[in-house]
Length: 322
Image 1 (cartoon, helix red, strand yellow):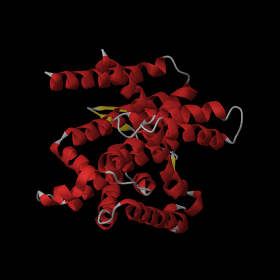
Image 2 (cartoon, one colour):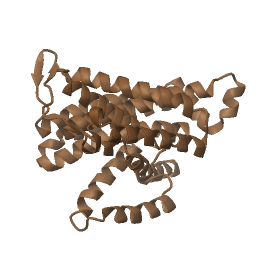
Image 3 (spheres, one colour):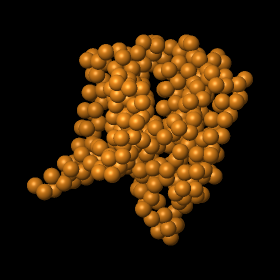
């Protein structure tokens, strides 16, 4: 059956990607292992954004707010005596989910540019609080996390301070986040999300509550963005106002456009392109964003489906032609 073949193909692809990523530190230097760790974190961040953009048709410029809420909540909890990474992660997820619920309740009532501007406005409010509430957030200096607690798993404990250990920890957590996203998208709820993107009026006519559907998607997206923020704070040993700045919200947008919003792994592919390009170009010039802009313009014009989306579409057309 075609459906079972698609499922089998997707499982095989996912296992292959995970295996390649798991073996990568054996062939990479510590420096590139750290870059790959950042790609995993930002890939999850971009994919959480794409749950709104690619599957719901909602452009959010406030994802950095939830990213930062997770980072600050986890960092503050550890600095105030929490000795468990897992508990700090749960606190970060809880704060991000609560923030997404409150903000999403107000934002999902609007569409298109109005939704985008509302998320941008709330994101800027979160940044202002993070930057100005010095007693809690450290102000412009942020919060430094000098010592990350040991991770306890099935009676074993280990440190994620070494780069390779942090990489594998990030790989496992990010993979779990991606799996959750996949299950959401493949569920009946995911079908309703796509329907709300294509024709929300028809959903209203059949009795569906579009605002509730969008709110659930907003909370899931914000929570997973918060998970990315927790991982990023553990990776960088800090939480800083730059994590919640509105310009940081542009990163998942750029990554999604680069990789493609119509393909599940498109944003993650865009994150890889983004960071590899940054590393290669910065060896030549510090103005690497100019180069990124020069690449992004023809990508949008000639490959509107994104780089990965265009490649997948090309192979699909060839298979149909045969």
